Image (cartoon, rainbow, N blue to C red; front, side, top):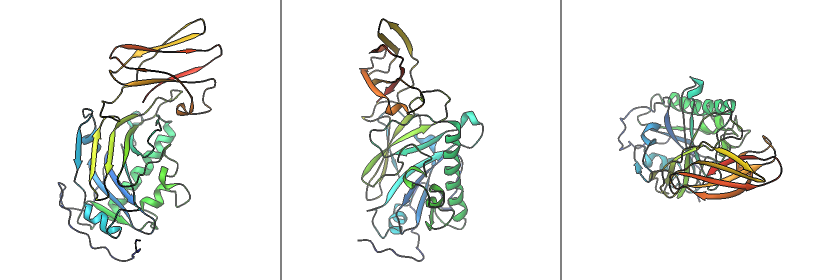
Length: 301
């Protein structure tokens, strides 16, 4: 069982590809966050998010540019009981270019794009977390921030709006749980704003896996190492009671139909699941037999 210690932590010099300096933070930097009740929050800057974008499905990147020893030392030599997450955000302007990137610990949920106001909330929290981490480590020697979870500028307090909301979803800013246990994988999604209803699915960039020894690995693409699945343009036709939804598919990707008789009362992942089809690289179709009014969405999974 861990013994909670309070005092000064001697940081071990990181053997990494980053220069030895205080933690810095810029827009689009990817933050690796660790927290556990009774310990300091730990934030590591992994550098620009671009190093993980646009990779071929199945590409594996071993992420070594953070101080594993200092992270583990903060938690009394073990990551048992610790939660980790990965977060990043663009700057606040221009509005049309805003994006966030979040880890998703839920293995079966389907994140969707969100409203501009919700995206602004996500972006504001992430930028504040990174900015305060940089400010609090102005005299640090490594790219890591260790802050008391009771500090008003800590990850814990910012994410939970001062301790009143759920930390696992960034205080409700995220529609899904962003933090995971070591020796488990998180999927990694790019979130942007949309006015479309129903909301389209967010893009999965890849997945991260962290071992209990602190080894972090990124794998590009969706589950199974496939490439990212683009959002299709749908063509809808109806004959009698049969509705046919056709679209250009990605080879070997799997698509399914979602439908609802009402619009806006629930998010797409909670809509009824209809037929499914495997992509061929050409045009494929999904059908539904109904007599009433229905709203449709196509989901890759």
